[in-house]
Amino acid sequence: MKTRTIAIYGMLIALALLLSYVEAQLPAFFAVPGVKLGLTNIVVVCALYMLGKGAAIGVNLLRVLLVGLMFGNGMSLAYSAAGALLSGLTMIVLQKKFHTVTVSVAGGLMHNIGQILVAMLVLETTRIAWYLAVLWFSGMAAGTVIGLIGFELVRRLGPVVRQWKEGAPL
Image 1 (spheres, rainbow, N blue to C red):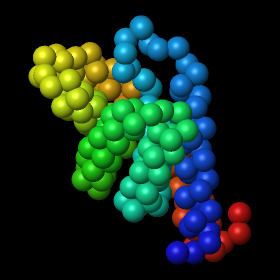
Image 2 (cartoon, rainbow, N blue to C red):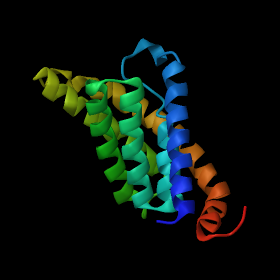
Image 3 (cartoon, helix red, strand yellow):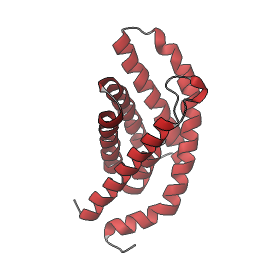
Image 4 (cartoon, one colour):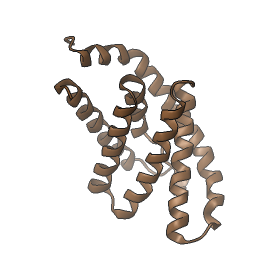
């Protein structure tokens, strides 16, 4: 792996950690547990569209692990990992055929499904599946915002990042 590639991954992971911290400082929307903007998903969407699926997977996994170790606990790591896994795989599958916004919305929805599945396993009940309706709406709204931001960043920064990765000076 080239030094430049490692540097790009490091910057993306650092940005994801920063956005995770910023999001943790924001008050919960409508006092509804589990509803978040998903700011770190901007970094994953950008990595996917600018650098490919390997970068998106690597950044997403390292982000989940580091955020879990720094700001969370074992349970938050399990919830986050399940959401990130389903979200990441969904976005990778959809990336080639759909717009950034659609991919982001689908990723947000799958993230919520992953978290509810873990909650159902932990609590040993399916009764909380109704909560998907709340998370579904918030996931669509947040996914749209994140997708629009990601689209604009990829449009503006994508060519520069790809050239820099290949060795061109900034």
